[in-house]
Length: 436
Ligand code: GLY
Ligand code: MN
Ligand code: MN
Image 1 (tube, rainbow, N blue to C red):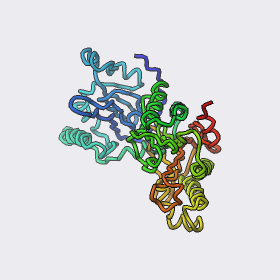
Image 2: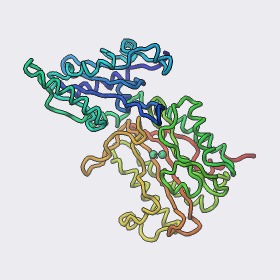
Image 3: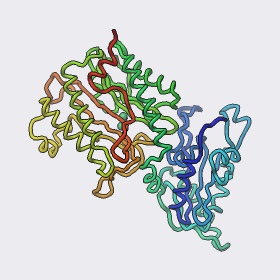
Image 4: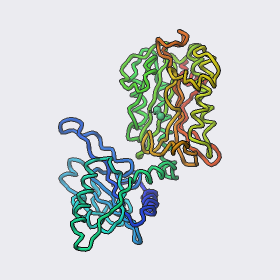
């Protein structure tokens, strides 16, 4: 099977993790297949930690990393099976998987429970994502109990259990060159999807028609699909943050908010654009839009190495609150309104999150009272918004306007790189949507 991948970046991550294990052992399974209904399964999605360390796409697989003087990385996976391959498709099988994915050893997954006690014996520490999957916790404890039963044969059972997620989350927070390349491409595909929807939009269309335009472009360009359920929200539905029904007619004179991102080679993009269904902003829509855009630009400008994660949220918040005062939705000093959180009816989420294999990616935001300091390779979204619900206390002509603008941003050595690129100024959007 042509699989144009190099295992080098994944092997390098395993090596980096092995160096942290001491004499310990780490066990990282991929995700379980999930029944959708009756005998039909959801499309398989690997576990994100497993993917980070392997690039191995099949279900029913586990890796075991054995630290110490002679470190080994071992893959357990399905054996080849002609009959199953007729029904479900190609399987590598252990020998080809070992070669292709750069493992030291590979064995059939059916031998896992029998081999695990020997691997664990005399290892002082077990690293595992404890509590993530109770079935796996049990399986590990069963193996450990086998070793405990062998003490008179001189074997020692591990005494220390460490949640592997701490080490892996810290690694995943800073993207390597391979990840940066994939995420740039995921963002480019996502930008093309949003651009296609922006160009296709016409009064009289339904939300799902724009969803289809976005999905078409994602798949056409080779993304595996969406990295989260896409939001296509016409008019006041944009004020519902997790609106995913996408089943209403678009309002002829309203805005539409699209929050969608593709998944490419296991990595997420996450992007939002908001534009007028008619192709022309009304004065009120434009006023609110310009506030959100200025807040987003202020936030992007605050993304650089050496500053706390929260700095760009603060920059966005300050600009949004000033804008709400200018729009007549709030009264008072910006500092006072931030202190009293009077903006919360109109802006209730944070300005962004880590982005990577998961759309809300692994990585600490805060340690105790201290925000994580941005460093090159960290990747995040910048996504301020304003949501002026019908019936809110804001001036009536603003009611029903919901706007978010979201881009994907890499922290670089001297500032940042914005990955996503669909037009977002009022002039550029109107130009892109012009039909004459
Ligand atoms: N689409 C999910 C988010 O923006 O966080
Ligand atoms: Mn989003
Ligand atoms: Mn987001």
